[in-house]
Length: 253
Image (cartoon, rainbow, N blue to C red; front, top):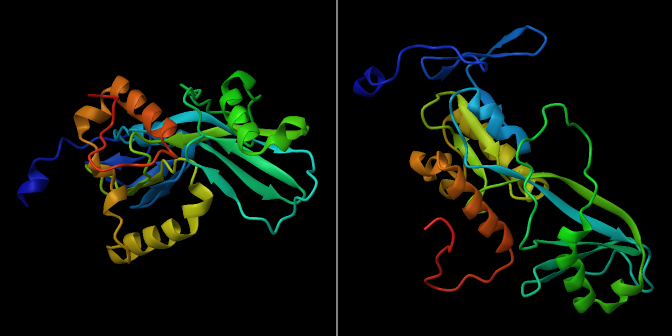
């Protein structure tokens, strides 16, 4: 077909693509797994993995956090979660305590995710998290006089429009993206896993995932590191912002 004749010359990359088609995965122990499909579900490292196949992604890692309070009088697991869109914070019941977090306007990017980082956490930067704590105290004054039992600060991947990257990667047949979940990975994982499995096996998902299509970002914007960072920063800070008619992003214009 004409489209096939326009493909670049055959080449092999670290992920085992030949002629812009996945043929296998080369492992760090020197073995090659032959396969025509690779699903990139590598979170903060998804960009680096996709780059191995010559397919850059508009995805950045941040140090995203929440803290767990000491027990609070009257708290129990049957209480509803609270989200304050004006203060950009949330409060979730966690037994007799609360897990509290939010989306600050000064997030901390993790510029180069370390290849040897696994099952670990970062030390919480209280200067960064202070904006969230101020909102928590305003919404729930009891927080101010309650101790902190633990902090959780880990790597999370975010995209310029706060939507995941799910589906076939343009230009590399057999490479499927399932990343950039913007701190919604646990919530979306079951449905995305089901839909992506149907897509790979039967050629189409059962639901409309057009809004998650990796092809929605033009190659020129993906290649513009400043645009990706500025838009990702804005989308993160506006996670809880109420969207009004005719709203447009401020960054990357």
